[in-house]
Length: 98
Image 1 (cartoon, rainbow, N blue to C red):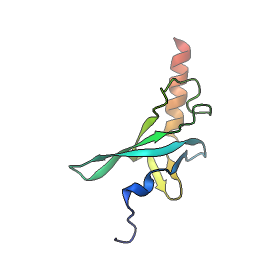
Image 2: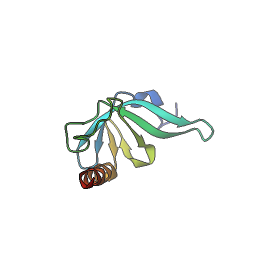
Image 3: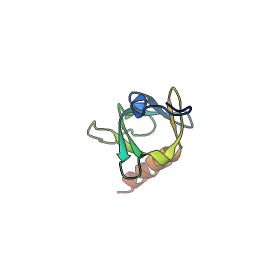
Image 4: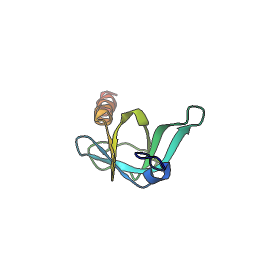
């Protein structure tokens, strides 16, 4: 295996946090574009429904898909851009208006 490369399956089970330190969930699966041979998104389960991001959402216990372009770093955890916080906040405001 080349230096700097890991097997994709190593992502499964890693905890996902926003770059502001908010727990998002845990990587359950990975979507891959087989033509371009690249990861397109992470399927995240065990999501933080009771926390700051998804409180009050009925996510049917399935989780969320996070575009891989939002991933900032992968180590012992997966760090994603804070855009997930802004989107969750915006959606909450939209729900309140209705």
